[in-house]
Length: 340
Length: 220
Image (cartoon, rainbow over all chains, first blue to last red; front, side, top):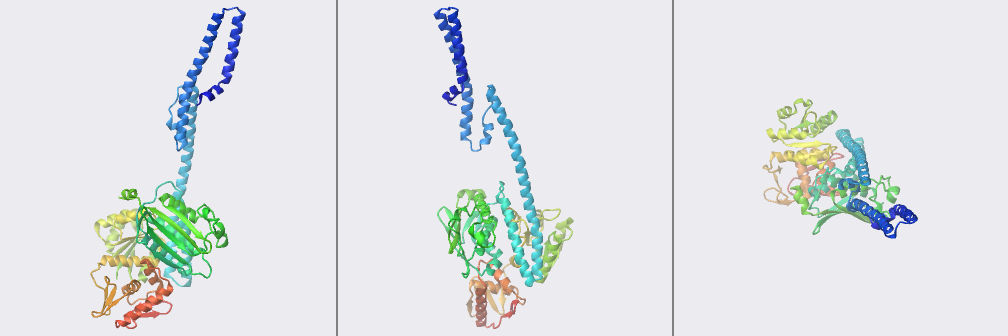
């Protein structure tokens, strides 16, 4: 609280005070009070005004300056109430009490939403586990009674499984709770699991997979990484170029402070104008319209999961020739200590 | 014949699973009454247990822990829970492998045979028609001559050797190769098999691998 703005705020009071000082002066002159006494009375009046103002300013100044500086320094501004103590003067007290009540109401409101979102997530998670049972059952049936129909059913079941996984990981990526484990994961094994899971689709597309330098361990959650690579692979198989054999190249390189995992295909690529937005929610872009309809959720979830795990992700692409995603895993000693 | 015990509360899944296992040459039994799971499982004296985590009365992970106290029968956890946490927990309680539902049945069978093989120990040297499999060198030997196999050929040969006399589909072979991080395509598989054939012929095993049209191959 600046002195000047305080004075400006109190202008009405000074005007009234000046008015009354004038009136007193008028009276004293009218009753022919001596000049000395007049001067004494007027200066007493002025002294009274000034001292009231100084004390008033000091009380408010302390409280409001404290409030403002703490508010500036706070990351979560709604916690301001917790940071200040109740002031002694009336207005400050009212302000403080108001903050307290508002904060309390807000907390209750947010808690309600948190609860309902946690409940919803829990239900989604449970539902996904439940729906996987009939899928597993159908998959076994299709395998046991194979034939052309069995093969076709298996393909559709894999699609159902992929979609349910997307829901599951969306729910997980949006949640504040920590439900992943960062531990040493061999990239080779993770890639093999992803490839194995998508083998039929890869073969159906006539694609080939090349790998290089995957004998590296990184700190990540293996299951989450499998989902991320699965999304890349699904995209690579979807956005292919006609009359070109799709090639997916997965390689890793170890730098001093991090490990880079490259996932490159020779597919349709992404138009440069779409590139900055491909990780946005529900963004489908040009490829999403010209090829099979896309939901625009896959890469959004991927980005979210990477953020949660603390991996950075980047993409480079040239239209009609390639797309390359790169995930950077930190080689942080801090992780190692935590996992021990 | 290895006996596999299925602990799974979904009726449809356990019946289909048992059928799959029987079709693949295993003896399969399953638990139907979960009131006394532990005693039932132990009294079945199976060679391998396939266990779900979400089972009535007792959590699968707890059950696994209790079983581990009594015996060291190999256990593969088969579950629809896909989090790394569950996997780490199960493995720390002594599971031999962890597979998430829904699974590719071929992969499940592959894992089962791998776990059974590991449990049986690796003491026995595998032989085929007087040929010894030398894993360290990656070769086949008839005592006088050594024939080096490529990694892919070795994977194919071992896979067929484990299932000698029964049909192995191209799909099975593909799965086995991809599981070993060899992402070959259809053509490469054909090439690998014909090379393996000629190598076996050189060692005196003519026509060891027979082609069954539209079904697969048999190692005689």
